Length: 152
Image (cartoon, rainbow, N blue to C red; front, side, top):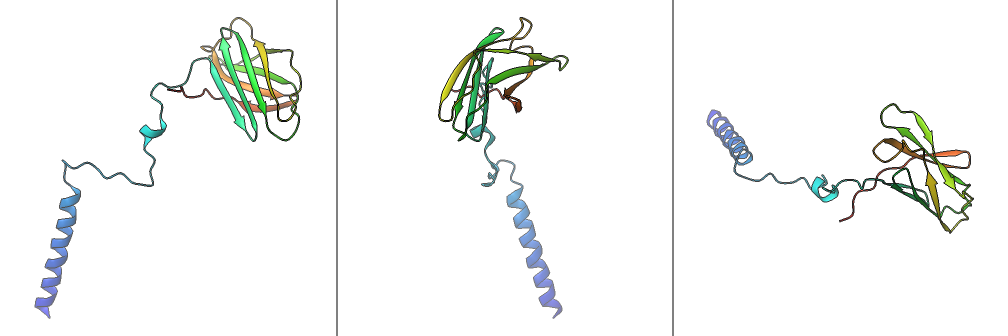
């Protein structure tokens, strides 16, 4: 019985060494985990587009494009209901102060419609001074826009 135990112990030790030896090959490329997304497949090396912002949620899609302190707001309404008139404000990047914009000709957006509006902010607001850009519809603050990734 003692010989059988030694044989099993030796066999187990050789198996462990073999497994460790194959896992420690410094020249081998690591095998990717199929459940982990490849970061290079989702990251855009060109980064966000300066002055462009996106808001998308539950049938509402809004885009903002700045040209200096003014620009264009486009809203696509597929929410199933009319949306109240839009309003924009920013939180300044340096001190977090709220700065209100003006949406020219703001009006409600019927369901199933797309509307475009011009907007203006005071001269001190441009994409380089914005910490966050927010969308308000009527009395409801819908939250912050995100800068969309550059399309390549």
